[in-house]
Length: 112
Length: 115
Image 1 (tube, chains in turn orange, brown):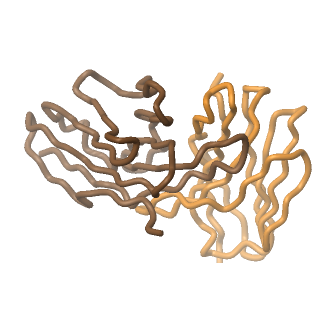
Image 2 (cartoon, rainbow over the protein chains, first blue to last red; image 1 turned 90 degrees about the vertical axis):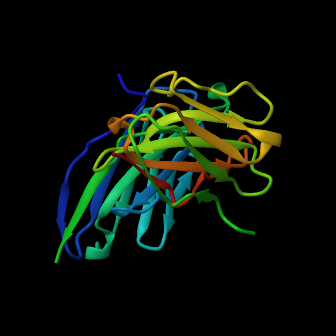
């Protein structure tokens, strides 16, 4: 079992729809959770971080964390073609000296 | 201050040559990572430096790869006797460390091409 798992996609959604990206992790001691976006040929950039159970909203983005079920998700409302990218989930834990563990990423395509 | 910087941005080398890739992390960041990303693939973890602790080298693909971090700041990734399969983008990232809030920031990467 991989430490952080994501569906590789591609996930295709029409423009204006809600895109839902999911990530599961295996280490129950994980404490910090991050979503990164990576455009083709570019470096990953942070979109959201979340540390507590529940939802965290930032503009069109909502991160959801459920530690009991060991999953974290990212919702993108009103998806735009410019949201088309690969979305990487990352997890850290003090037991791993805060080492980042990345998932392999989900490729999102927003269709105009 | 400035973000993470890497040099060179592009490196073309011949098979069998050694290469050195440099990373300047964000000032004050104690954690530094090297990743490799082949075309269309995910991030491949290579090595992790955390403060004065021994580095986590568990991702280095072979003994041709090594990295050091001098003075807790600049890091150099060295690939000896390069092979064509080493061709990839090498990304460096840094973060501050603490119980929470340790966002990782990536450099622009070095694109390595081995002919």
